[in-house]
Length: 162
Image 1 (tube, rainbow, N blue to C red):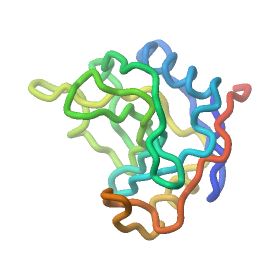
Image 2: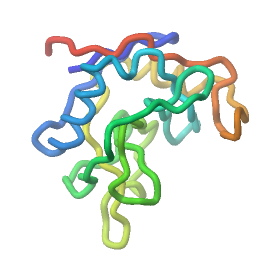
Image 3: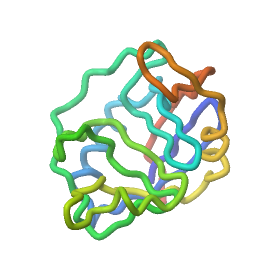
């Protein structure tokens, strides 16, 4: 399990290691390297997702490890509280960025004609913190939309005992 300590509170997640082994191993490498410390939730869309794991407070993008294979065909759903790997239009482009689903987003699931976004974890404690993050004021910053006016910073992301 992982505890995220943010400027708006803490939340805990558990992984789906059996269903998403590549995504989980990738994410844990970033955690163990301390990569997420000091990154922000840079995209907040109320009623949809909060996304983070790639930018610092000044909106500089961090250098990442190589992209991983998309595991969206693992049978897991983009339901409220699930974490999925963010990616570009390239199906296998996920690196460090992830998002937390604020509602059931079934259109992000793997289906015929839509490869989807790989779910790899879920929030087990602290959905109230996720909802607090989702409620912050956002605007446009350095060419990006939906950026929090006041940065929401991941101060620490660490493994914890289950």
